Length: 363
Image (tube, rainbow, N blue to C red; front, side):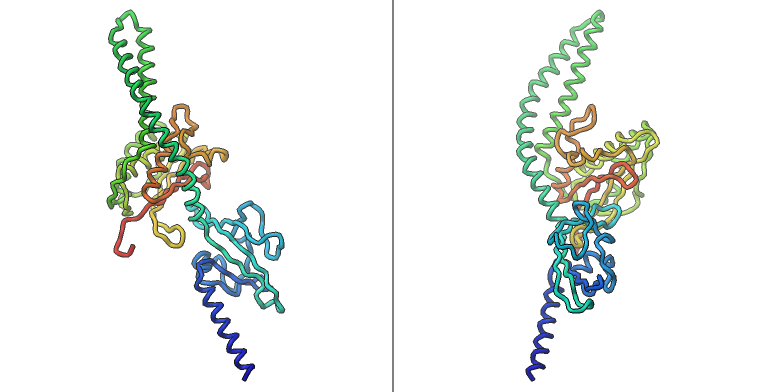
């Protein structure tokens, strides 16, 4: 009787353990002494799919890459918790995972030897990075607004006086007229910088509506096409007859895509290609999003500049203000989305934007 009660208690304990593992949000696979996955909880199936098949072998190198570039091996005693990256779709950046390894005492190779716990920290790291960036930009935005206000009035005075001076010049003053035109050109360029500063520091509140993103890209593409034709740059664009509904501000999204596509065309040489892809996808744990990618086959961005791309006033262009990408980032974030950069698999650059899909009865 005592033996039967002990077996019953062990069965109940086993059921409890499985219920706990099946319920937690972390992905938990268990590996036996032969290196075979003999258990995975539902979260592991959701996160990895058939990358970690039940009954199949487990190897870090087959599915993951360590965050520091080192290879991880089960059985190593010098690590308990590490950051790794999980590569999924070609058009998506890798997921950031935190993995913990626990080695158990076993009497037979068939028993569980390792229990791994994977936590998807992609969204947490993204939000943390955005929070740090927002804190930096908040103070910079206030400073920019004050500077723009102080510059605008004297700049308008300089422009007006220069125009009056130009009106007083006669035919014999052609050389002086050239200097006047140059001053007016430079003041106009400064005025554009001031306007960009104001847009960066005080962006207008988004007027959210439901619309088809494909159709809305028509006017943007028309503007970019003429610019591309002048440079003999090819465009690969989506079929405007498709339907991807988003919840966003039409004008602000047009500004974002126009800026990114123009940058892509400017980065390309004759004969190179710029493209736009729009589709549906998921982020985090199945959250539905609209994913748009602006790509080019130009020279790309040097690795040492990648982290500074969205910083205000950073630019590699001789005539650039360095505010275009910072404004794009701010607009997308105001829409509850994100914009990221990565090097293209075939060279060039890719800017990946995720946006909120149009509300439906289910979401």
